[in-house]
Amino acid sequence: MDKKLEQLINNENTYFIHYASSGFYNGSSPAPRVSCIILYNLKNDKCINFSLSEYLDNDLRDIDSAESELLSDFNLFVNQNSEIYFIHWNMTAKGFGFNAIKARADELCVEFPTIKEKNLFDLSSYVAYIAEKKLSIKQILWFNSLLIGDDYLDGKTEAEYFDKRKFKEILYSVDLKVRGFADVAKLIKENKLKTEAPYQINDGLTKEERRQQALKIAAAREEILKDIVNHNKRILKRKEQAFEEFVENYEPEYEDEQGLFLFDSAHPIISLFASWFANRK
Image 1 (spheres, one colour):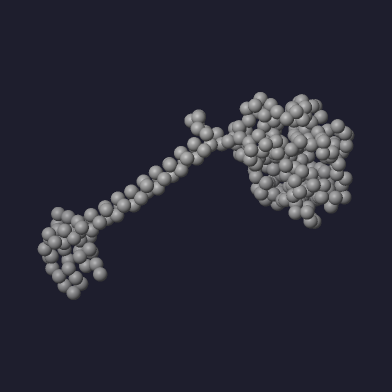
Image 2 (tube, rainbow, N blue to C red):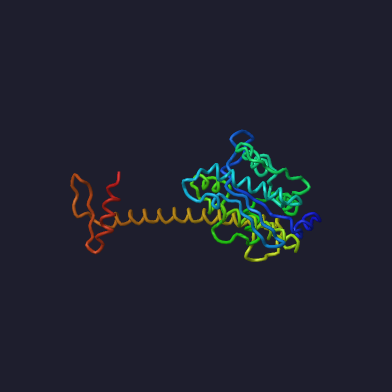
């Protein structure tokens, strides 16, 4: 386990952090609006919510003023805890995270705290290092059976929910993620983190062996489909031959300008089909 991560998760001033907004930040104004910032302290199992669901006491209150209060309270909390540390998921990216939140705070004329780089730890980068590939939040939570219930929302849905004022649903989603990050850190510490999709049966195969097996199964499935198609063609051909034999074996009751009419009282339905078949153009 990374020494810095190990030190941080045992620090009472360390918080796992995540947030949600009305969209991604492209570097220009206006910046996406912030719906919530959630902090979770693993050491004392304490969660702190800065969510519009808490600041909007009625549906008539202006969202911008509630958002300003939310960001002001977050700023106050950080400034009151000068030795605070944050474990985050890719929140130092250009279009997401601290830069986007600061841009929105600037637009609302709200002070935003300066967080030193040494006080930050990007959990997404460390998980990518362990897995040898980049994983999404949903993937790492799913792989480790940390997706509980239906609260998880992807970023796009959280943005859509902002416009619908579904701030409680957004809060539940972000809360699930930030607590999930803490569980991921614990699994890393215990050397139990899973970075592949869970399988019902532990077949002991390597990634390449599993891939080759999947290719064989796909090829076998293709052959089965071809056999089914050919079988159906043979069945249709036999039916057509049966109709032709029926026409040859039965004498017509009568024939007029409408065409040949075949009828067998013992097989009335078949006779109708035979008449249709005999008069096809």
